[in-house]
Length: 302
Image 1 (spheres, rainbow, N blue to C red):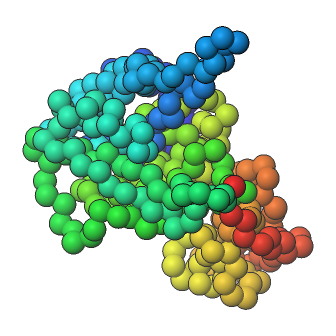
Image 2: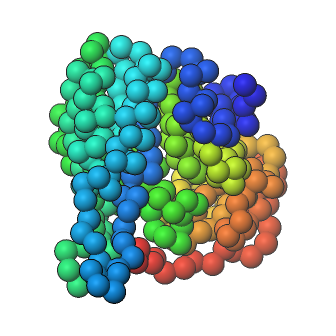
């Protein structure tokens, strides 16, 4: 089975995860955000009977998919492993019942997005994470609560419609010992990026090739040391925070500093995604070229 992309830390496969997972090695952590919206959102009304009532049977397609996926994951996961399975209030019962036969414990974590969608009723501000521990999973040494507060990714900044914040994924991965991380629904590669930043090995699977391409570009971003980030005045999450120097100490080559929404990102030259404005930063002895990337007002999800 040939990978779509592979380096010393990360492997990406393009295809159906149900077909690919039987060929993978054992893994230590699964962190994934599968498609979990209800498959039946409305019915076509008739002239005489109106709109038919919804039925719990409408969830059968999603229920079967969850059972198949979780069975695949359980066969791949070491007895000491852990699963973080993103879902919402409507699909959590299906995630729980799919994971329950395979796990020692299944509990909900709450991701507070710290921002709600616009509207005039109770607005969506959280998602759930089904946290499943296998029979020999070691105790997580943390005093953290089960409400994880990480600001959601602004719509203008997203590389995937359901993109989750990198800091959230890094916080989850960092709770576990070094091993192989698997994301069978990797989307734009946030789990893989988090694993790389933490020095972990990771495997990602994605059925849409365009997102495989985006994930490869995200993985090509350099992880700058803290002093370099301070020197450049850039912060990956909150945009420009200081003055721009004429050189980037300790780096030989070219970097591109991109601006998307109110966030700045660092890429090796030539790998910057579409939709990001560009700056070229020379390495040691180089200089900043081009106009400064424009700052955009922060936009809220709609």
